[in-house]
Image 1 (tube, helix red, strand yellow):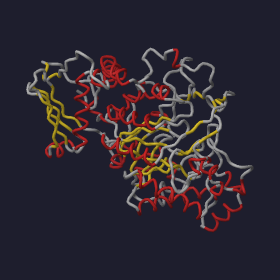
Image 2 (spheres, helix red, strand yellow; image 1 turned 30 degrees about the vertical axis):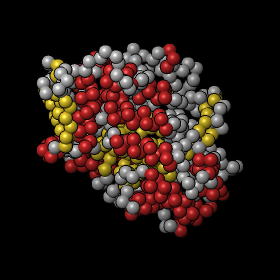
Image 3 (cartoon, rainbow, N blue to C red; image 1 turned 180 degrees about the vertical axis):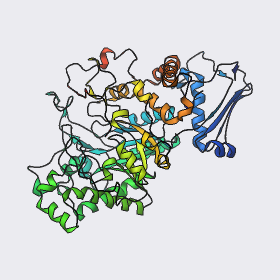
Image 4 (spheres, rainbow, N blue to C red; image 1 turned 90 degrees about the vertical axis):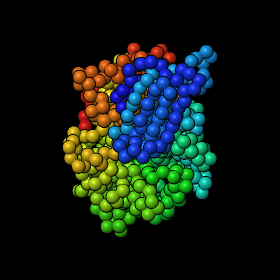
Length: 526
């Protein structure tokens, strides 16, 4: 089958029907040399099934393909009575196109309890996705216990109410909302993910998107430029509350990151770095004086000063900073995320290990790759799963562009500007992002993610040649739709995923009367 496809090869005689059949798993150096550590070979014969992986992850991904071949019932938590298992004779050689095959879950806007995160890990693993990026802090909530700063969760993890819909909506849910992960919750999540060869990447946002932290510790903010006491924000958008550019603030966040590094052993730590409006810094005499003291070209450059500090701090501890594409310039922007004045050379001052999450389109990815930085592609125009799936009136709380299943299947993570160039190797992968301003619970998250996440998973696993067909893209997509209808929707049903049906939302999936923010123009690259 196509690599990573959600279906098996041609169905031949059933294997494994006898009691003597076995499933054999092993690591094979020859497979590693040919297909890499995540590659595998699966052979099903009359003697049973054998999976040979380049390393333990390859064996695991081969087992996921074996599970697909067993049929949808293999995705249930307990076997159905009277069910006999059989496999088609098949030979598969398979390996991923990209090392970073990710999904970002925003837990700050609407909190996902621990059990929900564990469920997401299972869903990612079943689709051969290997990175879970947890967006843990924002203006609307702080979701990670920090033992030395308990007010971050005592105060910052809770907001008094929540707007229903987008900013233009007059409706409110007046119940307090919140929650956070304890240290032991995180240890469980990280260990559970590691067993499934999924890396968890934490995000602690700075210097913008910090109102929840400032509500808990007002000394982190720009007191000389703020009116009134800060509180955890109950609205959507980008708050103008940003961190004060002081040594005390740096020490505070170093303390936060020391606990983050203890809890998350992976190589990558995301610091956000996006949508940082400079309004407060411009109004603050202390911030203006600090920028002058540091020899910066105005207060907007304070953003880059924050980013460079934590880039060096993480590198000294053997970790790599990841940030949204604003880290390439000064990063100051308005409440719509517009770019600031820039820093001349893309990524100037960043260490070579810094990784760029390119969300505003291809431009950041191209600039970062040409400057020698690794890139994770996640453009909002292509793979923001909170964006609506159809232009019809039945879509619940429509946000952003129309991004259909076909659109996501047509996404190519390597920008055409890099095609054939050495810099293309800097595109280490891609991730689909699910922001949760209007995604209030598990059912709603399922609806936004699936089936589009299945299409994304095939895109980031398969090389371009692996998905080629006689009829080009249209033929490949028709084949993908056929495989979805023949087996994969039934697998999602068995997993209990409340996906969007191909025919449109069920009545209970709609949200009539709740205003969204649809973009009517076609997607544009920045």
